[in-house]
Length: 204
Length: 204
DNA sequence: AACGGCGTTGCGGAAAACCACAACTTCCGC
DNA sequence: GCGGAAGTTGTGGTTTTCCGCAACGCCGTT
Image (cartoon, rainbow over all chains, first blue to last red; front, side, top):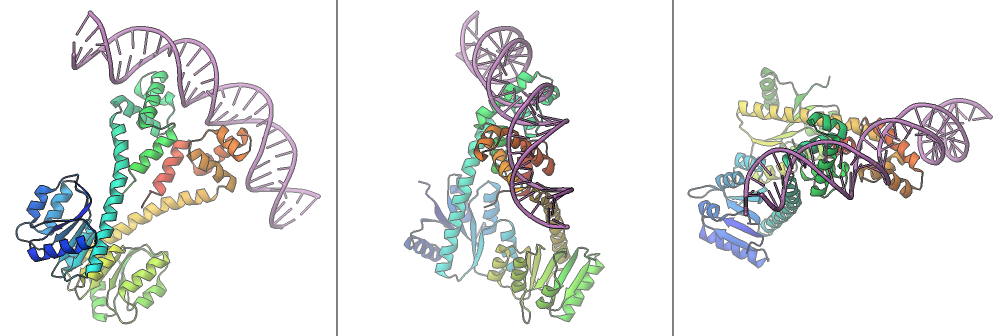
């Protein structure tokens, strides 16, 4: 049901149809909405692919929809389509994380290329999140105490020190430690740190 | 000598002077060049701050200068100034890593704000590179053999296994190991992995 | 009350890491 | 050839980690 697709949002019937035809003729799955509101209502987390949004529409505008979706945690790449070359708008959109910003009239081949890029971006992002999600689930299965211990293990502290800090016996720390490793599927503190750093790379 | 500054490149004398005056009146250090070529010739790695480039200039254009500087490894954030609202150009510039793209006529306050942002970005980037450079220098001081050992330590292998793989005695591995820790200023394998991951975050 | 999850602890031992002291070889440049 | 850097190894001993086995108390559910 939720196969990756380019999700077109445009109030102009003619343009929607033309875009649908264009993408389908190129073998790209496409769906269309005639308003930002209807798309927003239909959007679920399971939706995959990318968005192709008209900037200027009656009611909710493209950028507005973009903000709403972002606020909702939607991670699909967004490409804007605009008829009037508004540079500040384009700059603002890209700085907010839009994937692309294309002026009408557009070149069919170029548009399709950009969309395919965006679809690929979504796929790779999604793959990255998958593996993160797996780790997150495992992290969630840790008990509070185990997390306290893990924190200190990651700080490179000796079990002895950790025991002192938490006011418990060394043996207890050892038990927690091995439970942590078991639950997270790693075999050493080194692997642990690497897993965590891979999952949540430091970003400014 | 190389205090952070906004480096203005514009062929129009009047605009250059106006910009210089604007920034200096706001307490922002500024320097100016009348062509991309002269700026390129004067640019050194030690130069700090940000660039404010006119897009359209006789000879080398702003975007062209941007490319050249990027190729040379210059890391200063770049803001483009353009008189003619060219959306595809703006999109291309931002996607290539430009910091901002502003249309003339610009609002003085806004321009200054953007420049200040860019200067801050440069400062923080530079700080990040500093610490990376420190680590890189230490890594460089490792001998080839030590690097071989480090690799395997980071893989979470036992000294015993490493010794087998390298065909040397366990004791030798221990010596290398402690040398590595000493040279890199860490006290455990855990700290080591964290240092390395902090310095070079994984990016797609 | 019985059961299970969680946190706790002790004992005892195997494995691994860590360390100071001491020494040998090779290779390279002065 | 001498001095030094790098790589290598051994001895002996301390410290830490890692584990299986066994057990107790608390708490919430059934």
